[in-house]
Image (cartoon, rainbow, N blue to C red; front, side, top):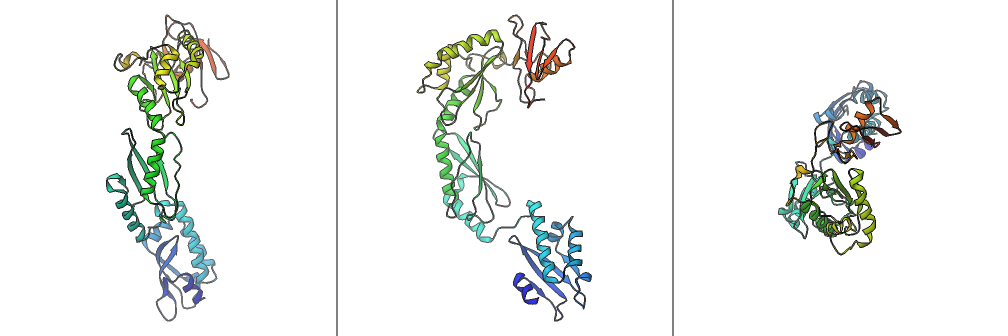
Length: 371
């Protein structure tokens, strides 16, 4: 037993000839835990006492009864230590904050890689030296951030990488890879998306964007104001940004129908060599209101029920079809309003009723994800 105990736990040693007191460390998932085991003269584990370091005591919090049970039932010290290690593995999995501290070479490797990459590219590093944020600039001068979560076996184990991109971030990693190579791969991904961001930047600067309120680099959708309570929602393909995007016209039917007819009739005029905004103007035969010509308040008409423009992320996109009314409402506001009226009727998730302002017929469809 003694030989097996030392072989499996070389840092746990007896302190006396009788071998009734053992002190030292047991290793679990590359992490060492200090403990002391005091055995009675007959070496029976049932009456043994286990003394833990504060770190081990904190980790075993909530598992004390299991450890006591294992101490009572184990045949010898070797089997108890094995049982204790199993319990500790479970504890470490359930408490990621207690993960192991990387070896010294991890830190020297990280510093060496940062010196090669250049410290000016470092935007942030956490106190554990596990999460690193690197800055990068594409050929159009846009700033981007690459977030890297390093593993304790770096560089043998691939890190987790994330960035604000409209496509999944595909990174190739080998045990010989470095942060410098990772950063270079990220720059290549940014260059492949430059045309996509150029298209959206032009739309953002030359039109009034209703949604999203604060577009991120991963957003592929823009809802562009056309006029009062009329807009077009476009979904740009990051891989083919200059092709005809997916379009959806929103607003009162009497205004939207002529625009929809123009879109269908002129679709063949779409020129992939021109910008998306220029093509939209030609196909719809309109000029989009821009920050240079219009105030945004012209398109930010409040909901006729809750009297606010933005309700969480939603804006008033349900419009009364009567040309003399044209009052906009939030979808959820109109849905709840109509559903509460005895004169309204509902068919599945569509409610038919009267406009709260002009009493003309109005319908609203409630999407499943909104409640």
